[in-house]
Length: 111
View 1 (cartoon, rainbow, N blue to C red):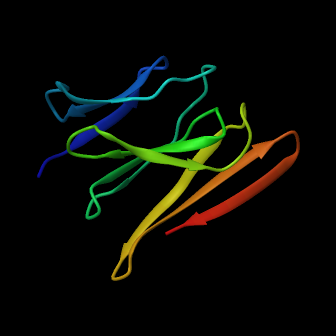
View 2 (cartoon, one colour):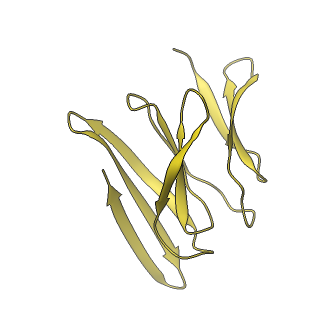
View 3 (cartoon, rainbow, N blue to C red):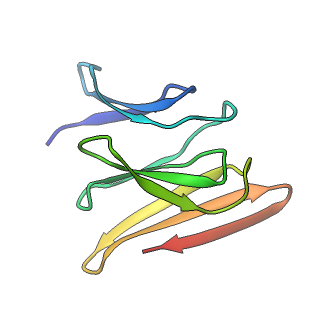
């Protein structure tokens, strides 16, 4: 339905901007413990937006309304979690999260 740019404000949310006007049209509340890059993955058909975090889990939001849909608990408090990729198929939506902390890395698959 349009082109958008998703950007973390580096404090408490991810904002969705229209392109090319760069008007903020949606926000997804997401508190950060420390200033780190957040990777974002969108599953368009499922209507979901996944945002990594620095608190041991990735958050899931409704892409259209911004409503919080839940979390994917991956690691411990303080672990940076990255939603590596989301894939949509006939059976639904699958997301892969990853983390790396103190020399240990892990990946989890969610369906």
